[in-house]
Amino acid sequence: MKYFGEIAATAFTIGLVGAALTGPALAHHSFAMFDQTKKVSKVSATVAEFRFTNPHSFVVVNVEEGSRVTRYVLECSSVNMMRKGGWKFNTIKAGDKVDIIFFPLRNGKPGGMLNSIKVPDGRTLAGW
Image (tube, rainbow, N blue to C red; front, side):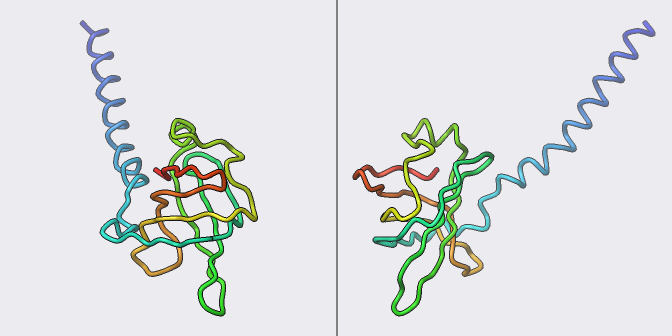
């Protein structure tokens, strides 16, 4: 009976630790910083950088807006999810021209969550 009590206490402790870690994990995956009620599109954006990494990939583009160039940092899904959607590490590279649609950042800074991108070979790929 003593052995059962030790197992129960250990299981309870592991459960408490797991529950405590759930909050930060869910907070990490919050999309609250993106305004998903608005979609912004940019045509002929120039890829500055493509980071095909976990936990999230990023596409960084430069967009000519009047007489100035604005750099947008766009968050994407994980490498695994993007591969399932047709992405590869070399799908885009610096200098490529792309058309993008994204959900902007709520704070007004140039960036957001990539919704879709038309890549140089003509395919349209999802960012999430």
